[in-house]
Image (tube, rainbow, N blue to C red; front, side, top):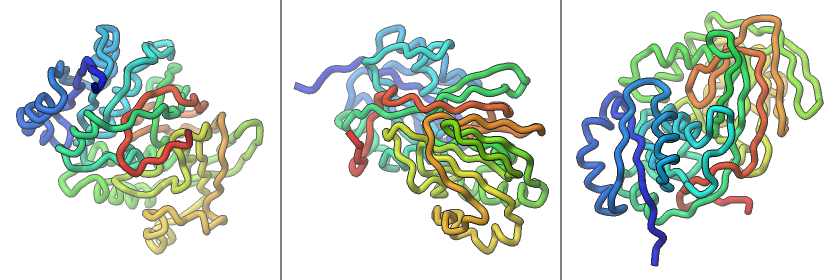
Length: 318
């Protein structure tokens, strides 16, 4: 007999330019037909999904549905932890139902785009323990802040791209929005001095950005970290040197497909469990599409700390 769960759905009705809210009655009907009773919590403001997830877990719900885009999934993930970073429970798991314009993290999980298939996966899919990265940094207000993330963080031009993309229209989809923001940022952004420590190894050089990844995709489908794994105990780190607008446009296919590693003059790749990044200049930091703060920052892999439903084709290491 299948295990019975208490299910809570954390729903961002504003995701996908409001389409999630407009389609919610149909979505809820399908959820209840497949999963039984589902308690609904709808977000009303930024970071609200963190509060709602914590509340649901403290109330004993052990299957959490995250319904929205990457920002919603980021917040729900952080809701599995108390404000001090400690896990609320080891028993509950999360099912990501991607309804946003990008939904990059769920690509690494092999979550289908079709809603009915997503709901079937929430009911019957395999649950695996996956790694997260704990990020400690100076917040937007300069005060110490800490978050967990499961996909990709950027310090440098990538955070500037996120700032521009979040202020722009998503009318033409996540990929077009991020590519447009990337080109705009390339016109003005210049390399800045950065010091990076990776498990004790130190690199210091002018840098356009530092990428720290668990998942493989961001920017609406760009294969940013082609070798990243969600459960290997390591973060993939990419250090990008100077690249101009013309060079970026010529190599846009490589940037999108994740083959820029054959340009060692532009990008260096290493793996580490602990990464510290600092600079003498202000450099913004984003993770999972959320502008979170600025350097200095420390990234620490926390192995097998979150139970997640994965799709067909996802191959865990253990």
